[in-house]
Image (cartoon, rainbow, N blue to C red):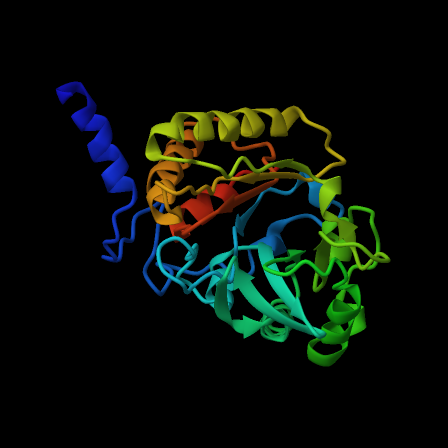
Length: 293
């Protein structure tokens, strides 16, 4: 019985509901980034394929509300973009042509138009940048969001903002563009999400399963530098489960990522997109530093 006590304490810690804000180099659940990096892509050569660029991303980008099991970020979308995030993971609920933002059952006090407006504003202010956005249906099962997505683009953005091709653009062609990574059926709006090389082992039942989660992340990150250079790699650092909410996982896995990147002697290669819950400005900068010179 006494041998089980340490493991039980770990499990109880995983479902703790403390909400004290933390700002570390690897993890930040405060409202404001420690510092900003709004135009880092200006330093990427125009002829560099986007598949060879390393960039930070945010998992469930708009999940700011709903309690510890729903919340994955604390920075606003505008703050995430200004901090250097260039991959957005956007989940929309489809009801009668309306696209509200959800994380599971949790409504995130926004709709898809708010997301598009923030991206438009950011790209107008920073035309050297590009934004990649996964769009996926969540908490509805219509499997028919294409028309609503197009309608929102016309209402809250404009058609020429989009990269209209399945092909991976160069940095020069991508500047000022929103690249939709289409995770729904219908004619092409941009690239197909499933064309990426993706590691998303998000199920972490308890904190006792963090080793398996990190091994999945580690394996994919190690494969990226020598993987297909014509294909975008996407590694999700995030994870959650009944006994391991997103904050609890991020506080531990983000640190593992920070130590992994810090100890890499050579930053002259690509990792692709590294997608986090509760990223901090220093780890965002560290990810950005891994570029071909």
